[in-house]
Structures are given as structure tokens and as C-alpha cells.
Length: 156
Image (cartoon, rainbow, N blue to C red; front, top):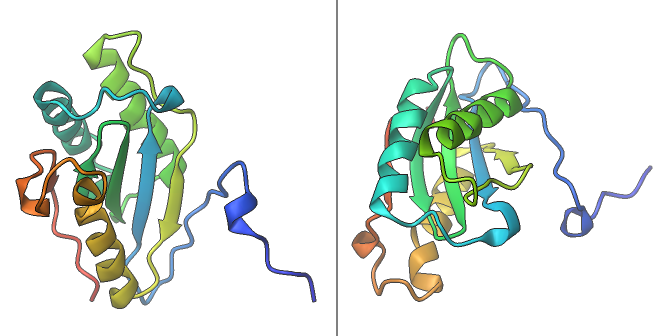
């Protein structure tokens, strides 16, 4: 039997979201800025991200936290969902076209994981929600202005 891959040593993420008929398809993802430049955590970026995510409707964006150099979020499949990786590339390109700051670029890839059950969903959300506190940006998660939820993604 082959050994389990060591995901901590991978240099590139594996993509492709398995959709299981009897379960909701919810993905946890992390998207970073190129060279981890710190340009995301501001009102203009936050507002434009929300607009682009609302327009990119083939996946629904759920809860999210925008950090200075990366974004954590959950996305849920719709009935007409296209490939997840194509959706991420689409909204990143739409954001870049509208933002028009050539120095503000995305890292080419992203790190996605399909959520497998309700407990994993809540565990990941607690991690994401507390990210600004762990990074010393605020003392309480509810004080971080660059987080929210566009669609309620439920594990049912």
C-alpha cells in the first residue's frame, strides 16, 4: 500500500473538488497575494471583493476573512457549478481588471480543501474567524472590519 502523501511538504496544491451526491459541496480556500504583499486589508479592496464575489455566481461565497496578504473563505457549489479552480481564476481576474493597480497581484495558485462534515466546517470557521487576533491585528474577532458572509452555507 503506498504511503500517504505529506501535504506539508507539497509545493503546489492538488485541485479538483469531489462532489458527493448526499452531501453539500463546501470548499475552504486560502488565496494569497503575490509575494505576500500586504495590500488586501482596506475598505476599497473589501468592497470590490464583495462585489466581484456577488457577480461570480456559479459558486456562492459564504463566510470569509480578508487579511493583509491573504484571504480565507468558504464557497458552496450551485446547481450549475463550473469547475471550482476555474471559478477562483475568474473572480481573481475580474478583481484585477476592476482594481487596476498593477502592483497589487495575486499568487498564481490557491489552497482549497473540501469540507467533509459539519464539525470540520465549524472548526475551520473558528480558525478563520480568529486569524486577525492571532496576527495581532485586533483583540477580538468581531472587531476586524474585513470579514463577513455573503451567503449562508449550511451543512445539512
